Image (cartoon, rainbow, N blue to C red; front, side, top):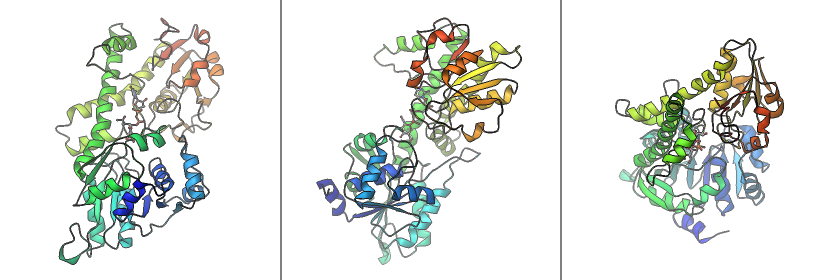
Length: 433
Ligand code: SAJ
């Protein structure tokens, strides 16, 4: 406790931090700050989340987070509540989902800003961590200053300044507690002194390089990182379709091409899921719809992949009444339970809708519950992998969970196999369609 890094934050006047939004990013950040001796008040609109955190529990799955939260609460450094308190610094980590027109819904950020405004005395640091379109930090600051005309951005006319910064999170779900410490961090200041103060705060726990810039560059850098990955996955997904049409194994093709010293193609799959990569590129498109053509095309390629997979699954049973389809995996990527924006869920939903006579047996090794989108479909049932495969006419591998390695590939003999991940490429060569 009270390490030199903690003193660095204290040196810029930060001893208490309020973290607004105790989700996948806010709670780990709150726990790690508290674990380093900062007094942290976690704020969430959900009473269930607040109660869970105060019991030292975590309401979602993330390795090592539970022990950090339990420890921080037990030692009295972390406490959760529904009301926004007075603090020296605020970290806003609330959702920024997209609306039907693919623009960002900033209402959670604005609500957080309106709740922070009455607590300010001047001199505080307000950091936006939520992934946001360009100029959102400025908008958050404006909401606060509209509510508090006695405060300012520059301390002019005797109105005390409040510091605003954008520090996007870049951690990978499943590795959050490690990457929070080891990743480099971008810190974008909106007004003088903000980036320096934010850097001092992140130095409490971040061992990576902390790179200072302006707020808009920081906002765009986060979006660009995820758009870069989306474009590269779209390239792989497009290749998977072209390769199939010319009779080539896409995984072998990519493996060979990647031997080139300056080529590094990603892996094709059933589409792109999760709450980041499938969403963030749209914020760039919305910022400049005429010119963000490649980014938009990549989104469209990745978004169209689930229907392509559905067509592949249904083709061999087009003339068969009531076929049985095994769908292995529903998560948005391997070895997790998170099904948000999952292409596998989309594929099963499309199968159930397009072939209501089909029996769809889903296998979810990391979760006991079907997602809401699949509730109310009598033709979708959850079973074990062995039962699903034994009964199936078509076996669709949708997620490359390690647990599926236990499946005896001999059980796939005689089945139509749609292997969207190249999981069984070497084991059942010649069977995969
Ligand atoms: N995917 C492929 N092929 C690949 C790699 C991924 O189809 O070669 C698919 C995955 O199966 C999944 C989707 O892409 O459906 C996204 O998975 P991911 O592992 O690429 O990324 P996320 O969404 O878990 O986390 C990303 C990360 N961003 C980058 O790697 C640039 C993470 O660092 C960010 O913090 C996170 O988004 C976020 O919160 O924005």
